[in-house]
Image: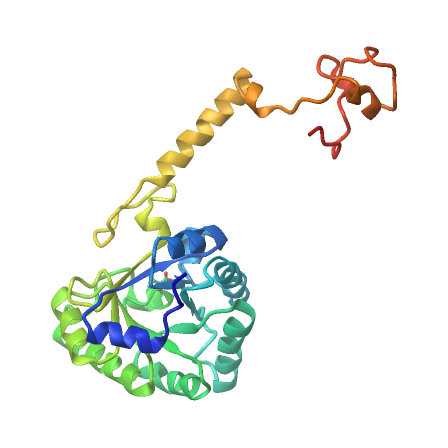
Length: 303
Ligand code: KIV
């Protein structure tokens, strides 16, 4: 069984040019499958608001949502390094509440690290968390919690001034003690420059090929949504959405046509045992298969 990576291992992977694979997961089966597939890091992203809870943005996601989902992920991926997002307004609003919220995610959720959106503006929070012994992953570029401030989901760092600001943000996060940074929706040349400039791993999403690792959303690489919206930076590895819809459609059709259940799906019982379940009536008096009012009460198992 492989061992859970540490932040030291992740920094070494950058030095060794060993690309870091990160995928989001939000529940027990997604975490277990990701771990079995050999993912390096699982992120319990607040993207759960969009892909699991049906919100338009990540803003409504609460600390309790993150803790609940992280706990399920931690049960499913016991050998994988788990990072969980600090939701909107659970940091940057006072040192004490930032520390308390991060502690809740780690103690109750079981994450090994937290992720915060923002650069130089949240560097002092990052530094306080790190001093308290909490590993922090930064997140700059397109930061979905500020989508209304940014004016939409747009590629960041295209203008010189924005590129310079992002470089300063990345440096500020590294200096504050972040062990890694997610760089979202940034041009490839800028992302490559930032990755080369810093010693901590830069994990890109829509940030091109020059980063030290990549992160994508579970539901995106599997087309596990309806409707599915194509994103330029995502590669689809399976179309699970269509597979699930078709499977459920077949189930509905077979239930309605009587094709399911088949012989193979039913339990038989010794003929003498069935009357006993109906209060000890004489054998042959009742026909529970053909006489529906005589069907066993819920909870009676015929095995
Ligand atoms: O919430 C999330 O899933 C994320 C990734 C997109 C990096 O922050």
